Amino acid sequence: MKILLIEDDQELADYIVKGLKESGHYIEHINNGKHGLTLAIDNEFNVLIVDRMLPELDGLSIVKALRAIGKTTPILFLSALGDVEERVKGLKAGGDDYLVKPFAFSELLARLEVLARRTNINCIEEETVLTFADLKIDLLKRQVTRSEKIIELHAKEFNLLEQLVRNSGRVLTRTMLLEHVWGYHFETQTNVIDVHISKLRKKIDDGFSSPLLHTVRGAGYKVDYHAK
Image 1 (cartoon, rainbow, N blue to C red):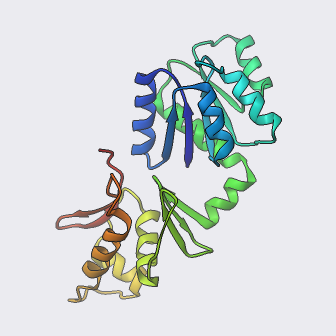
Image 2 (cartoon, rainbow, N blue to C red):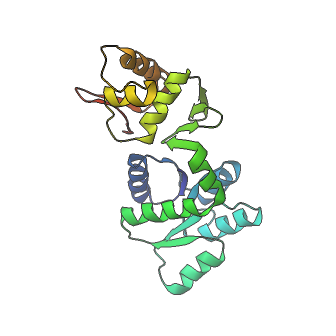
Image 3 (spheres, rainbow, N blue to C red):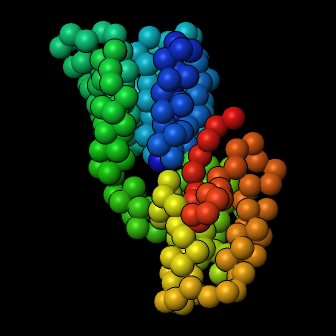
């Protein structure tokens, strides 16, 4: 998912950003309500996380403004204001869900995933687009981007990356990759995997702050995110 977090509590924001990145999602953080509204208007996100109390522009005003211009992005309110009346205000303003502080990260993640599944746009995208952190693979266009930058891949490189992203966080052995990408159902002495991994790593990692493609010595390869 591509997520926008509008939250002025820096400690809480760092906690949320770290957790969502480790879960394989791309997240942008803004600590100011006015700037957050501008970013939400000018960009497409799968889900917005909006704090109720923010400098310059409060969360209710942000959501009302977005709904007024036709933005239908699912919105999760975060707030220390947990009584029923406050939750009703948030939902009536156009919010889709309301989570009271303090909260467990697992609940936050589950609520975000539910919100992302509710829209038809996201259902379609799940079928045709793979995302991991800031990497996006459009399966229909056969196009790969990272941080909106187009990355040119050959057919086998594309197929190799697709398999790794579909199994993000898991180690795929050379045998598994040979079977899924090249159709070999047995281990060979070829170094085709190593050559393609080397080329792929240069294309998707060089020039970016955090590498996504990792070699697990003696085991295989995986796509994973470790923020620096």
